[in-house]
Image (cartoon, rainbow, N blue to C red; front, top):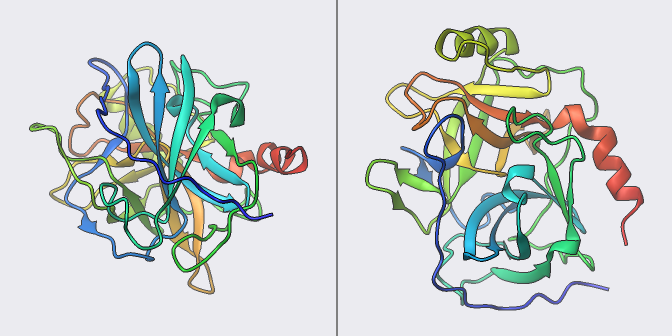
Length: 275
């Protein structure tokens, strides 16, 4: 059975940001507009938070016909429903070719049982769809790493999302943005973070990047993908956009992602126990 998605118009969206300490990553700054069908694994969703309403927005990645991978912090709290956009490039164009939407209740969400909002360890979650997605040119899964042996240090990667493009003026974009980035080694990242945030918790299940010169370090919507190209030039999901250890994401501070390869067993269990 293929998933017949619902076309829904969503209005009156409120956005939340942290005021101190580590902040979730909400923006692609100095990126470029992605073209339709260019990043078909990318999804976007709004979350309905009681009593605020539609008050959270995050990204995610399609990894199978029934699974979306995202960040746990996107789905933590008094959330009752999520509205997921598939195949979208322009979020405001409900008649956009290829765009589909699905409204789900919170029972479709699986948070990692070890997620810690203070350290962002295990910042990973799954959205389980009630029926198979029908893949086409606009909607496609992204591959996962085969093992946890590759560090991806100093690899070119791509971050993407619909978040803020101007932090100071709180300016957003409705068009999917992408940015070419470079992965750091964990040793480099940990050392740099400790210089700026003494005592910063760091684990091997993090993966970090620094931005190109002249941009801010926060490079994607929370929950969104960080991908590299595999040997066949296909996208491979290596990170989930997680957090920035410094409020307002100062230039030169590494952005921290959840390392997907650290959670392959956890993801596989979700595949096995699908509905």
